[in-house]
Each structure stands twice: as structure tokens, then as C-alpha cells.
Length: 349
Image (tube, rainbow, N blue to C red; front, side, top):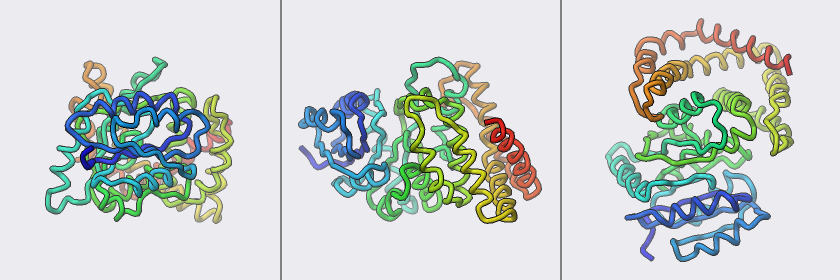
């Protein structure tokens, strides 16, 4: 086989059902030489053995790793040989045989542009669902994956990045079993540029459907906020709550709400006031999502595919409202509203 131009790194843990469609779609990719690296975190199903059946379709490496997505993907990156890396989740699927070729061409134009060497790419998403509820919500989330904004990019969308830039960023954070994608995404925002690659990935909505879309998005919002304001205590303290969740039932928010309350007041009342003010600032900075949701509702009503269509409300927010909403008085007001919402939720559990 020719020298690969793209190394695709997939962290796995008991993915015997999800992997075959993904690996088959990777084998069908045209006009691009790839190697696939599976970093397995200790599967006890047939994940590792079924991979051996596909040897010969492309260069395939199966690595044994300690569990944890961050360390699994870092190990895969260390074993890779191509100049570009693509990190994919095992439940991703690719419908277009030219997706990776088109993405590579698009990414290369940015990467070789002087002054834009620090570039990372991601795909838009289409959710593969078994349930038919929350149609508007899924349309919004699919549309948001096409944007290049903080907290709009996560690992489900695939991270395409040059080996050189990935190494310069220090790889994925291995300190926690979650948030590794959000933390790397934030590093790119701070040091480089995100771009949306052409085409879409299909990803399973199994986690949202199993845990409950509303519950999962509330927890995701907590984690993104605490990551943004630097409240790292929360992630360590929440590990027990995170690991104790019954994988077959809906997500229970009560343990996380309790941990969030404790950690906000961990260093006293005055520090809690500062953290709630910071939280108000974080929410104010994300007010664009309300404007974008209005655009999504209009586009969905016009039967425009998610991720397409005009966004006049978002443009109006960015041009006229963002600076006003981000003012200190409104940040404080947003913090007070958030406190009222949080404790109404906390006390009702």
C-alpha cells in the first residue's frame, strides 16, 4: 500500500455493533490513502477480533490502551504515520465515498495558506435516531455542528488536524474520562482556527435517547460552563456521580446538581458570588444560541436541511446585541437568573 496521507484514530470500548458500519464505510473511501488505528480501552466483547477480519482493506493497527478516550487517542496519534490526523468516534458513519477526499482538499487549502498553519477541521452532523421526538431540538443541534463557535464543536464531529499542530497543542487532556474533546477544541480557539469541512458525518443518537436529551444537554451545559470558568474541582468531584449512573436508564441529574452546589461554595460565599457572576458571563456569551434557535425554527418550517439556510437573527445578535448582553450589569443579571433556575431545579429533585 502507498504511504497514507491521513491517519484515522478511533478509540473503542465494546463497540462490536458500531464498528463494522464505520470500518466498511472507511474501506469504501476513494482517492485517498488512509491508515486506521483502533485504540482499544479494554473491550471484553468481540471488538478486537472482528477488526482483524478487515485487515487488507486498508492499513489497520489495533492497539491496547488504558481506558479513557484522551489517553486512547493520544496513543493512537503516537502510532500514526500520516501528516494529518482524523479522530473519529466508533459510532460514526460515512455515507459519501468521497467525503474524506473532499475534506482533505478543503483542509489542505487552509493548512498551506501562510499565516493559517494552526487550523483544525470538523464535520457537520446528522443524527441517526430510533425515536421521533424532539425533532426541533435535533434540527437545532445538527445545525449548530456546522458553526465554528466555542461550545459548538465536540468529538462527535470528528477532529481533523495536522500532526504538527496536534503535537504543539500537547494532545488530548488525559486527566479525566470526559471533556477531552472540549478542552482540545478550546485550545484551538485560543491558538488557531476551526473550519467546517464539506460533507457530513452520521452519528448515533443512542446516548441522548438512552439518557434523555434534556438531561444530557443540561449536564453538558454544566460541564462546559465549569470548564470555561476554570472550576476544575467539579470534574474531580463529579467522577463518582458520573461512574455510578445506570447505563441502561435515563441520566439522573440530582447527584450532579448536588456536586455543582458544593463546588460553587467550596471556597466560601464570596468566591461563590464570583463564580455565579462568571457563570452569568458565560451564559451571556452564549446568548447567540437563542438567536440561532430562532433561525433554525424558521428554516425547519421551510423544510430547509439542517445546517443550511439564512441566519438573520444570529447576524443581528452578533452585530447589535452581543456587546450589550456582555456588559457587566447584564452579566450580573444573567447570573441571578441562573441562580434562580439552578436552585429551583436543585430543590425539585
